[in-house]
Length: 403
Image 1 (cartoon, rainbow, N blue to C red):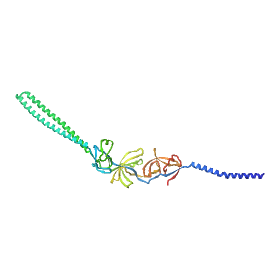
Image 2 (image 1 turned 135 degrees about the horizontal axis):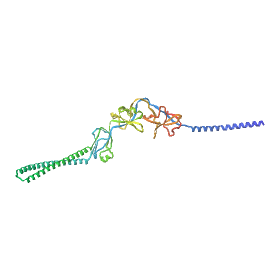
Image 3 (image 1 turned 120 degrees about the vertical axis):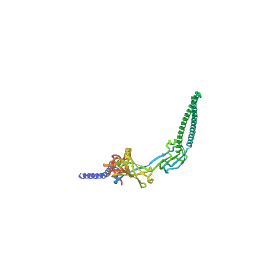
Image 4 (image 1 turned 135 degrees about the vertical axis):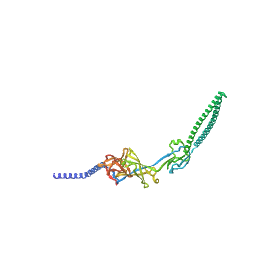
């Protein structure tokens, strides 16, 4: 009996051992699968980050600027006709008064000949009226003499009073003739003066057949050719012959960030730099808009510079350096961390607990790979590089520093 019990216990132990050997590996596999699933469920989004840094101390604001001519104007023709001669083309340097275009206008020439002929006709009429006045005055003088003689004869009783009445009537008529001719002279002289003004007007129009440069400059556009018809309709459509720019002095427009407008003053020296060619020119701040632009919160300032050697051209991009009142360090953020949205400019900052926080920032100067952050960031902030659509506010991420 005891032996049988021992055999049963032994068999139970052997069975338990066999069961454990077969069940434990399966249980380990189950635990591994569960652990892997839990790890996958808790896996964090991997992002590349970089730190915000400060620039080296500087006493100069370096701002991007756009170059424009100090004076620029379209040039139109005021005479109607066909272009007979074109003297200049794009890029030509001209002086004030130089001939740009000459227009052939037969109708205007004919109008001038007609007005001059009419003027000569009026002058001849005026001369005729003057001759008629002289004749009327001579006739009136004779009538006056006859009237005086008849008056004496009537007083002496030699002739009847009726003769005196007749001579009186003739004398009055001749005096009226003189006044009429004098009035005719006034009319003729007034018509002559009016025609002189008309001749002067048409002569002035004929001068417009020659289109001249209004000031020294460079032809930057040409919109005409020999044979083109120039009409008032073309002028009404806004068709200009040339565009002339004065490049002796240039205007450079810069947008000054709100944080640095206290360093900008009218009359202040400005250094204009051309990084591409390594040239530097000295200019002056001549005016500011005295108001900030709503979207960018920047102040528009104008710098004037003498274009020595025609180094600058309108449309160029330059850098304008303006000395500040004291040294400062700028907060710089890499350009590939910037996210532009309809609400403004943002960066994704990795905050406490590795949670993402999108911060709205105001940007200042653009240094190529880096951009000045006027506000919203501080030195050492960890920002995400090229954040994807998965990077959202409150998401926990696993940060990996950019090498």
